[in-house]
Length: 289
Ligand SMILES: [Zn+2]
Ligand SMILES: [Zn+2]
Image (cartoon, rainbow, N blue to C red; front, side, top):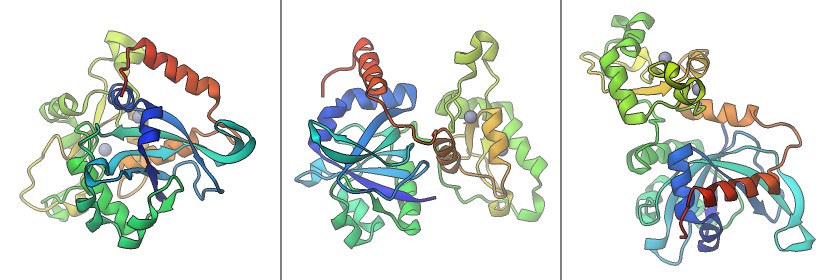
């Protein structure tokens, strides 16, 4: 799965009405935007995107968001200049940190190769090496928004030969662990955001399942289940998809697959869709930045 850094500046945060965007992601799980660049960007549906704020000083810089590219790149008139053409692609952000809480440059420097840090300052996508992605995911899990689902498999502790699929499933069926997991992570699917309560009303209460993130092969004895770090809410469709691979697909991989599959060839983010999002935010009372 490809991953890129997208550089943000103060003008972009103003255009997003950043505080309202943070609130929208926290409430609905997603914020849509149309990313514009000068030249053809080497991204496609399902590319993982890390949003890096590049301000004039340390306090105004750092990692602020995570999401996925959801369209092929396409050309359209540049914003505010009908005679020029820019490249665009759609992005869906799935987690955003409030301003001031971004993961600071000092911490990120250790995660990113230094030359990459220097080039990742503008809006053009900068491809990340897999080693950096692993570090960013760990940082984001530890320091990102608290609603972020664990995307890394924590080191567990059970001898592989002592555990079978059935024993792992037992963790997923433990009602106390399930309650603790859902109380912390909420009852929407961590991968597709489906909510049984929203779709089926009262009949949907208590239907969301949980998935155990730790594959049997990495468990050592004695293993103590942590329902917040080791379990994640998944609807039954996403749970089946997660277990379609061995080891199971991670939540990040599932989201990437969903972003890529939900894309219809030739589809673009229309001005109508963006306006609808702006209207919804105004009605919901999103404040100014
Ligand atoms: Zn789902
Ligand atoms: Zn599972």
